[in-house]
Image (cartoon, rainbow, N blue to C red; front, side):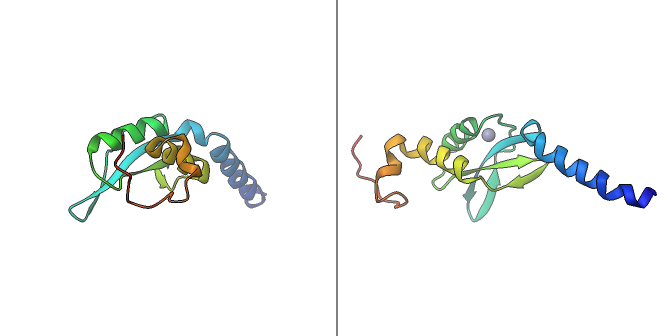
Length: 107
Ligand SMILES: [Zn+2]
């Protein structure tokens, strides 16, 4: 009888993890420096706060990632979109040279 309830307990915990993931999530900034992967190790509540932190590090090629239940997670497409918009502005999504490194130099 106890063994038959174990799958239910596992299912309940899996459900709770999904349901309350946002309560156990924070974002961090990351970058590569001298061939080493670095992360800010802050607990940013929002993705944009992490992006601002990443920008302050002054390292090109910075990125952000999520941490849920102490496990790093790649950003989902919406989160990637938000970071891209933060980096390049709201109109960056419409430009064909979306992910090219070159910039026009005009500010
Ligand atoms: Zn940070």
